[in-house]
Image 1 (spheres, one colour):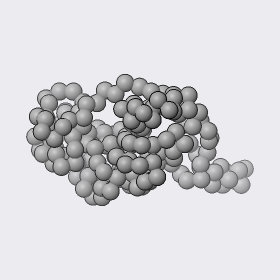
Image 2 (cartoon, rainbow, N blue to C red):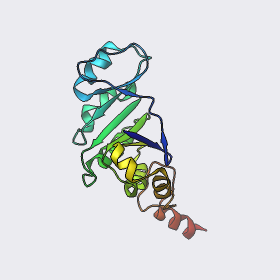
Image 3 (cartoon, one colour):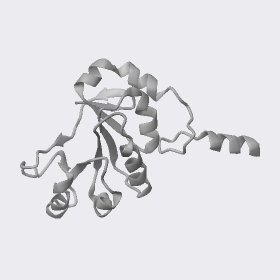
Image 4 (cartoon, one colour):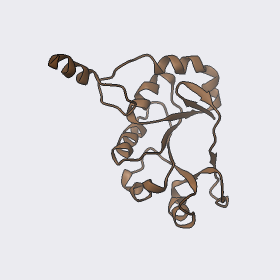
Length: 168
């Protein structure tokens, strides 16, 4: 899998654990949703860990664990399935401050929307990374300076710009 941050392919510092694998004492690791409750109970407060969840997950299933999580990876089974975008926005509204990762078959054209919904990183299969190089992801990221929706990437919305111009 290739990891994209700020339009660039980067090394992934996180390790995804298999369900039968023991929880490590150190390092950055990702557990599945069924293992989350156990990980929260067993791991100390300084442990660095995350969870991968299906895009059908209800935010309420994660709320209690949000303060302990450093990363939430939301699985995208197909590029046409946008439920993960909604989940990301809801998690940001619930004040999740850690890394939000979109993981799956996303394409570069979806990158600006993913960032606007609160995602920090995108993880795509190697076959997609071979077809859409870093330049395409960087270009997609910079394709729009504003959006219609208020987002989490620090970019202003078109509505905010219009209101500001009307006050001037």
